Length: 324
Image (cartoon, rainbow, N blue to C red; front, top):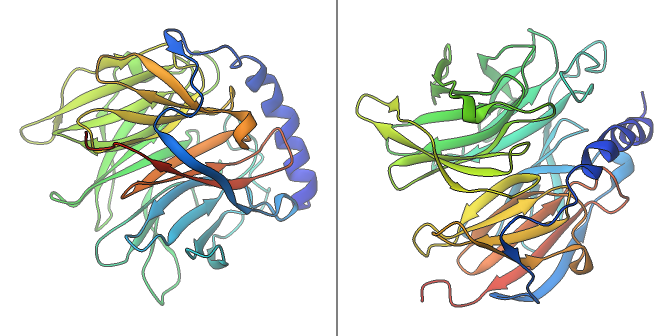
């Protein structure tokens, strides 16, 4: 299947899901930008080449490492916007049609270790390829942990102190953990709050303040899961709800305040520690199905996969008053 045909198929499939996620977040208030200024589209990606950006890891100098979902690629984007493809993961023989829910092979979560190693998740619907992949500088990508072929590995978080990775499975409603050296992942949490209600459940993931924080797209929730002694998972705590279509998120550096990408509604919201939220970006700013968000100093990066439109892009903005 060509990249153009694939994206057309994906667009048709996800349009129905997006139609279910167009309501405004419960408890949210509209905003005219709020703490975000200097909003602009920094780069437009090639949709026909499968450049649907799914997740991002930032360097201090503004370099972005990105997964292109439909092209199952790992790319580096320079601060000036130059795109360099670092690796293309091997395609399954059936083009990934057995991948649960979505029906196409896709790269999802990405994190970068301090030594420059990249870790990426790949969902293909096949036991041979689905799993956690590692890309070291100057080397070919290699799978270091197999994951269930009937699942959808999606969000990826790195605990740099313990050198452990946390992996969300949006179909099986599970968080797994595995050391950065690889091996057999273990189920860390299968709490019912992680399950989907028909499309995709637990999604984005971040390690923050002694806990793993995750989003649940179907349920519209942001959850905090305490990391107990011995790396045991505590009971999930709902920190915000009514966030229809929540995908990836990032912490602003002001306590537990969060910026979150809402995929279907084409919004970025600021979530306060008390769980209330304010819309700070929307489709009028150029969002086209935002899937990922990251922060470097005061610079906000938002990736739009544009599964149901024609403009995958990288939006940048400035966050004011971050530490006040």
